[in-house]
Image (cartoon, rainbow, N blue to C red; front, side, top):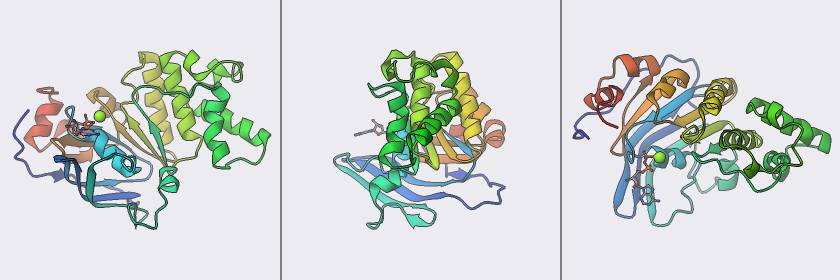
Length: 269
Ligand SMILES: Nc1ncnc2c1ncn2[C@@H]1O[C@H](COP(=O)(O)OP(=O)(O)O)[C@@H](O)[C@H]1O
Ligand SMILES: [Mg+2]
């Protein structure tokens, strides 16, 4: 890996909307090890933002700060600020479970509940009281499964088959339907296609683009091609720093930092 010498570059964004989330000077230590160093990042409504960069450079760590997934990690220290709708998400007045509900999380390895397909999706809506009746809940489950591109494959087995009975790619789409069921504003996806087949990958990529109609999507990907296909903007992480961020086309054709240029040219990974 190259030495860390460059100053971060933030390419301008042409947008009418204000950012939904503003991350400033974010530092994070796991014990004595610093994993994030002065990360500055805006996330806009209705965009797909891809995090790229070599392994171990802090992408997952940064993603987990947004929805406070680190709250129960021991020996961790976070400084700097993350504001969502102009409110500091680490302020004592914020209720962490309510904050977390604004996000859907999709992990690399599909992790469906051992319950039925229906229950996998209905659970989140039910515990948060998002539907009024069984009919509403049925309709909501159907909508979420349709959006995740899974409905046609499972509609006759909703109460018969269980999450883990599905193929890997179907399980991942089930997990996406489950993430959508709580009506999040932001979808956080940590290498969502890292362990699924090409068919499911294509569906999930299309879905990310669909989702930005009413969500922000932040996706970590090891595939530069995927970032290029789905992302409006790309953020390049390097040794715990967000070194360069900008519109996808700019990042792929005219990255300014030598590190991003070398990574995007495939010179290291
Ligand atoms: N829970 C943890 N405890 C200690 N160190 C961690 C923990 N999670 C990640 N790290 C370390 O922090 C750095 C960044 O990790 P991570 O955010 O997972 O990188 P990426 O997602 O870019 O591969 C790595 O050096 C990793 O080993
Ligand atoms: Mg990671």
